[in-house]
Length: 487
Ligand SMILES: *Cc1c(COP(=O)(O)O)cnc(C)c1O
Image 1 (cartoon, rainbow, N blue to C red):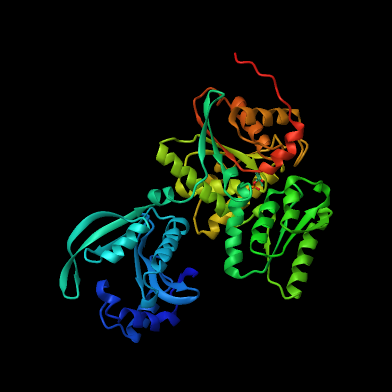
Image 2: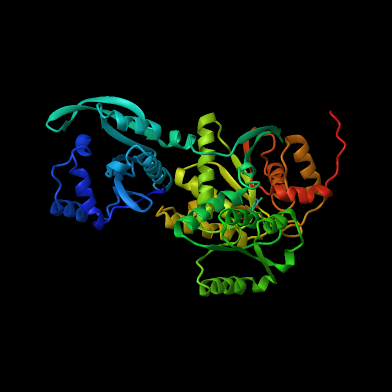
């Protein structure tokens, strides 16, 4: 059964009246009974479009089955009151309210970025209290004679769930401490260990794109990337899992076989190789052809660029902030490989929206400044304006550091320093880096620490491992053992 929530519409009024007027349903509700159409229509007209409440309908396989929502949404204090009421009695006890509650908490903490969701429940309503506990609410206190319920004063419990508690229970990639590093403490955030097809930042992004694909009923996927592309590997896998045909438009300039391209073939992706200047029109043509054949294609931009990709790294920032809070560690610097800049844009947006203090430093693996940095800035502005988060331009500029000194001979190229670094990172930390992305970023981080006087200053440094493990194996043939001595 597929459970979803959506905004309450005028057409839902009849159901609401039927549900709320049922004595079994309204046992613990506090309405002026009976509900009538005119009154309920007034309520609907008065409240539609209000920013301080979100009234929603729970659907099971597309059929309305209950009500859920947030009241008194208070942006200043970052909190809102939650309510839920199942309407269809036959649907009770099947985990519908639990799943819907999970969805509305996700909405409250991800979309609205609230700090707390709370509720009041009559002490006698044991069934509801079991549900609230299961979705993470904790009892905060007893309020005596708090409400008049069906003619008598009733006691209520106050329950709440904080953003920090909620985040702690969301899936997170591990953060590991690697030890002393140029007189600082080095940590890795292992996004390469996202448990899907060798993980990486493209897995984090693709999960959100495929959510859209599933919800929108799309029946095929088109994307763009070279034979080295981690993005295309993941997209081809997720498409194959759903039996959706997947077309990869690939530039002929970077088309030598790699483990990633072998995965794309394994997953049955159709690879269309064209010179880079024909990529744009080939994408357009492919989409048109699919549409005129009666298909409903979904296009995922190269590298998972765009607001959905940015959102994926806002979530990564939230995980980092949650780790910092839990362990009382403050990261002074966060380094990572920056390509389309989506990863970087998400981290910056997360920081700006939560008032974080970390220095976020993207090491470019392909683009030069000023273009590289401008693309990041554009993505940050796009995302923040879509979310309606007002932020002054100076703060955005200040938060965006894009270093372009480690591109090497271009995307996918490597040199002997990089080969040596891959060998050293594997030997010392047990962490696979690759010459296209993460090793360049690691080299950039080392140089940045040395040249900007941070070496030896005891700072906490986080390196986000953005993935690319199959590329590590492509590099294996080029790396050699370095003799080490223990001084
Ligand atoms: C794509 C990729 C990057 C760059 O991410 P962007 O969001 O495009 O900046 C970094 N590391 C790895 C391993 C990648 O695959």
